[in-house]
Amino acid sequence: MASNYNKRLHLALKRHLEIFADLKSNQLRDHLLEKIHGCPACDCKTKSLLFSKDFFPHYKCTQCSLVYVNPRLTTLQTHNFYNSEANEIYNEKKFYGDSTLDNEFNERNFQIIQKLFPKSSKRYRLLEIGPGNGYFTRRALEHGFDVSCIELNLGLAVELRKSGAFVYSNDLVDLSLPTDYFDVIFMRDVIEHIPSPNIFIKELVRIMKPSGYLLLDTHNIFSIVNLLTGPFHTVIFPFEHPLHWSPRSLIRLCNSHQLHLRHFQYDHGNQGLLDILSYRTYPSFTYILPPPKKWTTSIIVRPLLYFSLLFRLHKLDRLIMSFISVLCRRGSTMQLLFQK
Image (tube, rainbow, N blue to C red; front, side):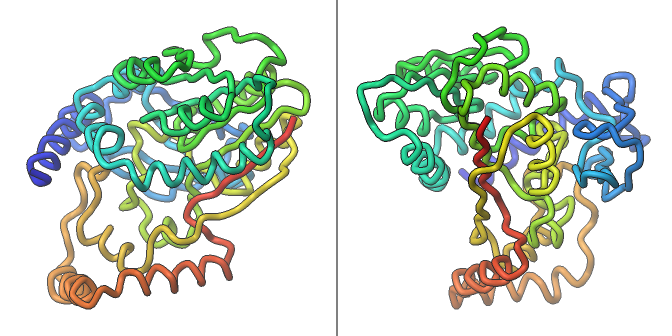
């Protein structure tokens, strides 16, 4: 069953890639994409190439350290992907399958919001952007929040409306929401999807009440895991993620819009060294056309992975990597709480 799912997803993604790339000449069809002429966060014109994945170059800004795709999908093509066959197949597991781990991450974020807004008779207004399966939305409704959501996937939006939340299916900047309206705004795994972050954050600040809160949860592009896996990591996905943030680049962006950091923490325990080897041995679904495997993969890496599974070494490995990440301050994901 799993192999059939993986095959369907890979074929659907490959068909989507063929819209933007000529697989015979190994070239992008630039006329279907959008080229940018400076860093999307700070407009710096100097950059360095980190890597390419499935023909899409990923650059690092020399000034703020943001990593960005250039050329990238246009807004129209991005919306088309969110409602594509490939995305619907992916959602079968992420949002309609076993969501235990996803729910744990959302619960961790909800606990931060809950401490800021103890349950009371007052109806605080909360906006969640990219709610996915709706776990956080349902928890916020149970707590007494007046909840609004922005979800671009039309199928997910239909399910979310059943929870009692008010759901928009348009981009934030197209909605003209009221000024000084929301007490708190939450986004998990969303900021990396936003192609124009200054316009986006400026609009968030406008619709937040004075002293309102913004909670962001996203991957750290300069974590130990990301540095060691490079383009093999799942989050490197040019169809959905035109930008990749570090603490430095994200704090700098929010500070420039008068948002002040109130809380910061890493999640260090996601993956270990064996997971990193596994990424390179068995590329994730987001690598549609991975490079050929080296001979060392079969002789060294695969036996090591089998040995670790046999003796259940993954848990110890992840604890060791967590400890190293703490020492180096290079956690896999990060939570940042800002106040207006």
